[in-house]
Image (cartoon, rainbow, N blue to C red; front, side, top):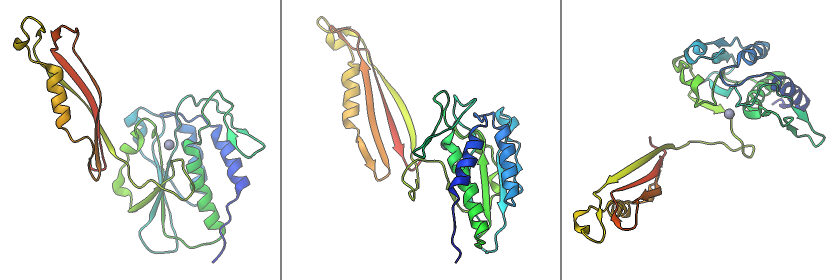
Length: 258
Ligand SMILES: [Zn+2]
């Protein structure tokens, strides 16, 4: 089988070029246009959906398919086009030791340009080595940083892939995140009844004692294999000589099962 050669100089040049494009969330127009050109060079006619108007941005999600010679369900490669702020006027600095940083006034935009470029270069390298592959679907999302606003509007019914690599995380090469928990935070308020703690405490209902009894009865930590529960904050009472009327607690639940 032919050897795949990743062209490092080409990656660095492409990063330098694309990182200079302003592409904050909801402002990915120029990046989307440039990526359409890049995908076209690879033989992918990417379509842009109508997400821009739905989310108040200026670019939609790009989706396209690269035909391969092999049969089988396509694989999806995905990344996002937007960066966090401050991301206007980015100037990547190439250091002698090989690292690339911003000039300190903006973000670098490596999130998620490194993922986008890895996808482009990976496909290029496979094509240059003339290695047969399955169909490859590409999704470059708009407005990922503000809680995946862009891909939330994407019509996934047009996608044939059942497995995907989303190149958008730091960590050692070769590792992947397989799942992420849902997080629910909660606040509970226990309302009792205030009373003077010395003269008539039996007329009060002790909010702090009630709340702490409830917390003591909870199973905290790992509730089951995929769920954790924590109460992290508690506050209540107002003065030392009164039965406290109110106690509030805040906590969170994390689980792989929403
Ligand atoms: Zn990202």
